[in-house]
Length: 177
Image 1 (tube, rainbow, N blue to C red):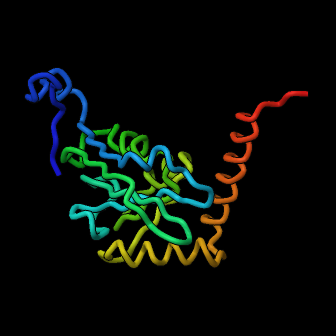
Image 2: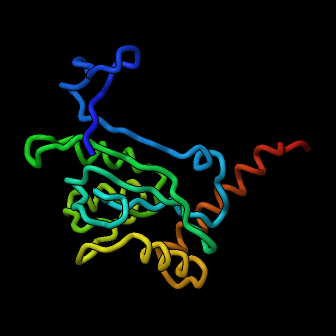
């Protein structure tokens, strides 16, 4: 999953940005930006192959994003980062967290203490798995948790998102006296 910043006119690597910033390639499906439904969580999975959680958060070269509700899970997009060394790149966590903005959770094989603190501050629940896992059963589990309740971070996030959506709808209707 390697991509370099490119000049939109020539399609060639852009030397001005390639040296200074690690690249991010973000692919979002058109519906995911316009079809926000109450009770839907956006969840990210650290994945090389887009079918398994198989990467450490800080070293992840890619994330697969899904919109999940009680009825279904739909692919919402893919994030790809250029491979980066583990040492010497202090901003890699902030860049990943910024790219995951709006996600309720991120599943990964490992996540360091600094990343956990930054994820929680960004209101993203880190979910560390003990072994490589297929994404599909995790999506089924999330759908069941949304439907049945009982998972604190999911209930908290859905209730908060639903309240924000209601307020935005009321504000859009106007507050005429």
